[in-house]
Image (tube, rainbow, N blue to C red):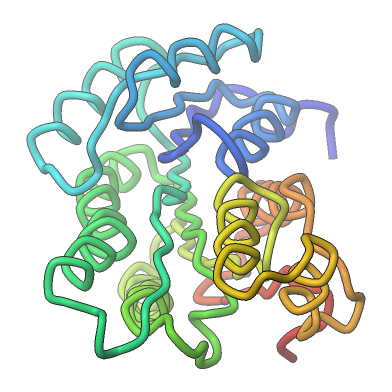
Length: 257
């Protein structure tokens, strides 16, 4: 494998302004791709892109709005050419017991975490077919592989994302397009920090105690690092990974097997 195996490829990462998405964007840049990062906060993605260096741009896109997707993706293609790699990373995570999961919360999570990936993929697959090459990687979660108490909407969205992954992998199996998912366990990001704060506030436990509870399902007893997720995504995007499709790869220290 050369030092720039994705040279000449344009990758787009939704939710790329921080956390896992930012780590993925940086890794794809290191593999030679031109990268567009998107997010709802125009100032954040622009500043993040400016700090990355190289062939990277930040464009405001709301993934649950088809018109926003069309406009943002069109702008991205004008800058770096046709989009060959899509990483559906944008998502939200909110926990609540079933009794407190109202329709608004349910719709918010499903719209962002599942419908957003559907809309983005639908927008870009035609261009990948024209290119004769494409990679779609959906950032799901171990919550898409198993149940998680107090996370009915989130689990439903991530299970749905894995179902979408498998269906599209089958649909485009005869084309040089692969569709896969990565499923991180609890990862050291702002979202997990907020989760720890919530546990501490509700239980009175210390941060170390809250963290121990959070990582207990992981046999390695630690948080996953965003760069570890990025490495898995990068591998799925490589030219030599063309036979890997329809897979949901856990990046979780053995939490699920």
